[in-house]
Image 1 (cartoon, one colour):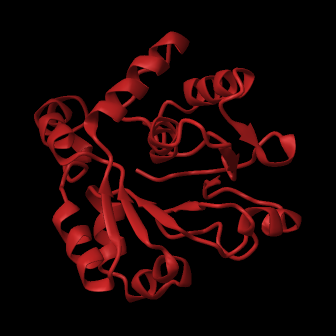
Image 2: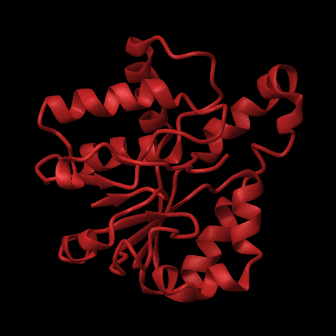
Length: 207
């Protein structure tokens, strides 16, 4: 079960908590109405979201973060280091976007007995390649949600993977329209399903 930060129906909490493995994002906004089981928290480990989480006592004490056995860093440090110079030209306002906090998340995991997973840049690049089929408008990076979906489909190829809380809207420099089409193609192919089969509602994975 992969839970974005959009709305999740309270009636679905029991289904979510009954899953074998539940992944939430960043500040676990899906926690509560979207159940409480949290096996992994996928985090933006660069830029402002990373700095905010690591500096927040509330984040560190959040019951979802506390109960998670794994923290997944969605941004390969090598990939984002290579992006810094081009972004300085194309998007100078994103001057701290590639600031890397992977080591700090590793230290947090070591201190709290969690496994730290860093999603390899090959997954990010495979998502870029898959998105290209849908002619996305110029974008900076895929959303964390899309990278995690790709990682789960790779890592748990035989699993039944269900999404909730994904609306494919949010930060302007994620290719959300193409991501929606890519997710729809995975659903059509039987690789994913949406909880309740509903059209999913507002989600932002953040910058």
